[in-house]
Each structure stands twice: as structure tokens, then as C-alpha cells.
Image 1 (tube, rainbow, N blue to C red):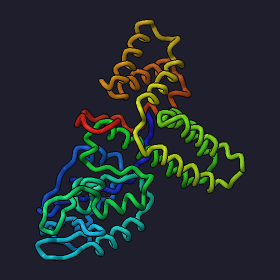
Image 2: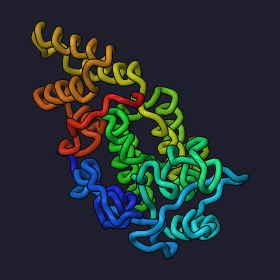
Image 3: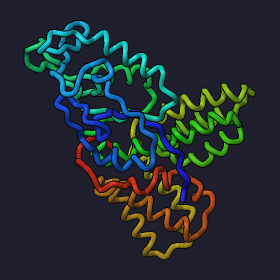
Image 4: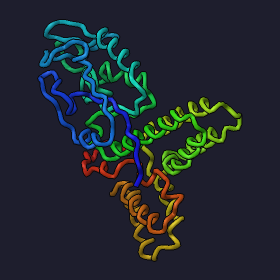
Amino acid sequence: MREFPRPRLVVSKCLGFAPCRYDGSAIPDPVVEALKPHVDFLPVCPEVEIGLGVPRPPIRLVQVDPVRLVQPETGRDLTAQMEAFSLKFLEALPAVDGFILKNRSPSCALRDAKIHASADGPAAGRGPGLFGAAVRALFPNLPAEDEGRLTNRALREHFFTAVFAFAALREVEASEDMGELVRFHTQNKFLLMAQGQAKLRELGRIVANPEKLPVREVLRQYGEKFREAFLRPPRRPSVINVLEHAFGYVSDGLRPEERRYFLKLLREYRAGHIPASVPREVLRSWVIRFDVQYLAEQTFFEPFPSELLLPLDSGKGEE
């Protein structure tokens, strides 16, 4: 069983940490609750941080050029305060591995806050809140999701995979040790292969370091490209390629009916009827059975703690 580093995640404080929403409520979230034993959360409520009380008159985004953050009941324009706080808070953060922010919030939303035609007018579109927009601008290569999208199994498991991989990479970067980077890259080869062969080859060239660059520069380049590799969930064909590749290591020891069963699981995964974790876990049991050490060390087979394989699934989103 893997020992996992603890990812460091910024989270909207209203998601089960404090009753700080505009109406004085909190919204306990099952994904956040499941993560609490495994990650270090940095909760924040940007609206409270700029001095708005609890409860408070609602704020909204208004379609001016650029978009403004206003409080219709009081007539206050809070744009400058929110932008200044967002920049100050985010630039002062320690190294973090990702963000979970409140959806539809005029401050925290990453993509789906209502943007109104006027302070008292109807919604005219949707976009990021001001804090969410600052997160996207300052941390383009870190996973940032809202609690609504994390109800989708594929998006959630990709988010978990990324943040635990990034936490492990952060430890390697702190070590400034080339040997640790080589070990990390070796253990993550199958995980990177699932994200795409081209990404795996590019990162392999960086680790090979033909230019004999200083370790810090190699780590900088590797960290940038490794995080870029996880900007999107893996495509099914790439995951199937990894599963088939790993299957080749154990297939000779299997009975014909076991091989047929695994190929059936691959067909079901290809059709979208089951998640990748089903054939992966079956394959992992054979890795243990035949003591295939090279595969046993691959993070692909246990990218995050198994307690986080939640049954929750909205059935929406993309894979």
C-alpha cells in the first residue's frame, strides 16, 4: 500500500468549514469531507476577508467593461477590494497543489457565476467570479474545480490523481536531488503514459538532461511540463493502451477465462459502462499475485488513497 504525501488545497470556507455564506449558512460537501483525512486544507472566504459581514446583502457581477462586483442593496462597488485581496492572498500562499471553490459564487466561481446586465437586471451570461478568475490567471497549471463538477466521477478521480501527484512532485522539488527526480519519473511512467505518449517522451528527455543543466533548472522544467500534462483528464484510448501494456506483464500466468474476463472489462470501459478503476483494480490484484515489482511501484495502480473511490457520480461532465 502506497504512502501518500498530503496535498495542500485552497478551499472555499463555506464548503463545510464555517457558516460564512451571505445568508449565514455553510454547505457541507461529501468530496471535501472525504478529503479531510488526507489533505491539508487552506480555507478562505474572500467576501468575509474584504469586510462583508455574515449574514450580508448579496453581491453580484455586472456586465460592464470590465465586469464589476457590486452590492445592489448598498450600491457599493467592491471590484477593487476583491481584486486587491485576491492578488494579495494568492501571491502569499505557500506552494499549493490545487483548489476546490464554490460554484456559482460571484467571488469564488471558476466558470459559472451569473453575470447580470445591470445591478438590478436579469442574468445576461455566466463567467468566473473575481477570486476564481485570479486563481485561473495566477495558477494556470494547477487543478482547480468547483464542488459541483467534482460530483462527476471522471473529473473527480482525475482531480485526485493530479493533486496527489503534484504533492509528491513538490517533495521532490524540495529535495533538489536528481536521483529523487529519476525515481519519481520512473514510478509515474504509466500515469504519464495515460496522459499521452508525447508528454511521457518530453518529460523523459528533461530527466535525461543531455545539456547537463543544473538540478534546479531540470526540476523547474520538469515541474512545469509535468503539471501541464494533467490539465485535462486522460482519454479512454490512452488509458486502455496503459492497461493493455501492463496486462502483457501478467497475462502468461493467467488462466484463459481470466484473460477473457479482463478483455471484457476493457470493452466495457471503452464503451463507457464502467470506470477505469474497475479493470485497473483487477489488474492490480494480478500484479500483487505475481509480485511484478516494476508494476507494483507504478502510481497508476494507486494514484490516490482507495478511500477516495467514492460512489458519488452525477453522470454529467466529460472524461
